[in-house]
Image (cartoon, rainbow over all chains, first blue to last red; front, side, top):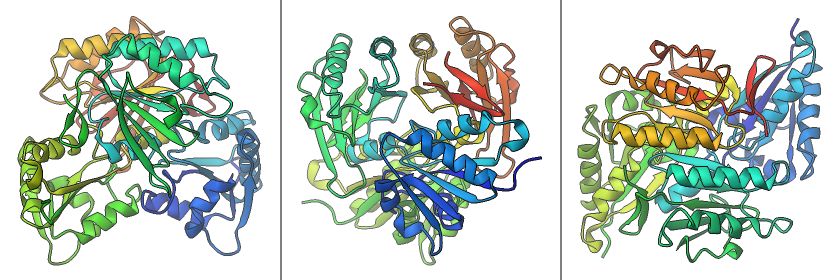
Length: 245
Length: 245
């Protein structure tokens, strides 16, 4: 028998109301329990309802939040587990689904994944349409993936000549990976390849910088940045960066 | 001098209100002129306002719609150009930006791209989180790209071992490309690699099929399908397809 609760893993988009979906609003508003990393809860505070139990989590405890969300739903609650961007793209969905799958089949709560506008899409829209043709999303975080694997993928994706959206390009603990990725990509693509660095897309303090692969300064990027690298067919159309077909 | 109009290229998501954003609603509701392919206009009819001029376009005349939208905005209108999914992912943004860029700088209208939930994200959410780690989006349409280029990218992306979201997998005029793509991918990935075929995600008649690379029947897919192919780390977690890290 399936437990009666429901866990909605909710992608809230880049932050703020504008790029959030109706389905996300509805899942947040209908929940008894809302669980998320504190700053993300603040970003969707306008969609929360009175009387909800709100559980503010810490950075780094994603697995703990996923397990708690599954437990609450098993116990019969309607739970919203908040994820930035799209819940299924470097988001909370995998952790929640794995936590539920580890339970005996009859103990698993119902789970729905509510998609959202992932950072690559929000960032791209500010530059033009750099992801208008084939592209790949790649995280530069080597916290859970060996850096050798990241490098192997970078080489293969560079060879595929698709535009790239680089997630988690740089943080205090990972200061050199973006520079190394730039150097790898520069071995496959011309130095003049357009690169966009977008920080805090769709949030207060949003910054957009257009540069080139040869001139990319990793210091432009931080924890909340997304780096977009053009393919060989990417070009400037007036002030806009577009991916040609 | 910039013309006074505004062109919003609006991604309405997969169709229907649930996965549409507030920014999309607002751009649609505030427009004087709404331009789009007929069925997409029907999908966002609830966001349109009384008194708007609505221009229903035909399949295949995307460039004509983009040019018309730019012209209307140049003439001072507030224009919403409707795109399915995300306006910047195989959407109308590139065409609109290129049409505007072809004008003398002073004649270009203001343009904003309103991002949305692209088909890959909507489809993935129905399967679990198959795009939870690195992935690429690739169109199998060879209407404007030589098939040899598509094949080259398929090989390189398969080698990169990222999950794949295949757009435009099959239509009446392009019946064999998906089978050929399957055979190419099967040269790089095990036959048991999980594959999801999602048709009409988030719309009436939504269908989700889970299969494997070896058993993928191209006839499962049509004009409104999205095919998701796992990477080597993709696996079933209970009933859900997830991308492991």
